[in-house]
Amino acid sequence: MNRSNAAVAHDLQWQAVCQVQDLVADSGVVAWFDGAQVALFYLPGQEQAVYAIDNRDPRSGANIIGRGLVGSVAGELVVAAPLYKQHFCLRDGRCLEDDAQRLRVWPVRVRGEQVELGLH
Image (cartoon, rainbow, N blue to C red; front, side, top):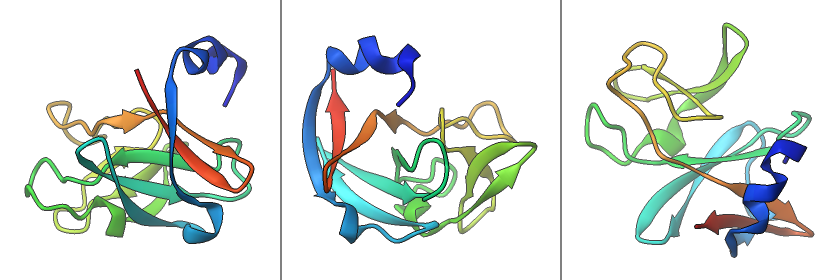
């Protein structure tokens, strides 16, 4: 988490969703959080190692984003949706191919061995 997010993070309620050991490097796993399926992507070696994004693909309606392939497009870390291959930015959830599609993102942090998501 960078300094610009520090003030926002202070106002959040954090809840553990899994252990770091439950994550798979360079891949996604799915957790249930606050009534939604959240895809957690673990990218060791990146400035931000864990990203949390909606698991529901807005185009197909299927809960499959956590099975998508992680990569980089034009310098943005993305996940490619498994069915229609649209690319979603892990940082902010926007679709690179279609401005009308967007995934919800959650504040996420690693605290000790816990992966925590933030609620406003």
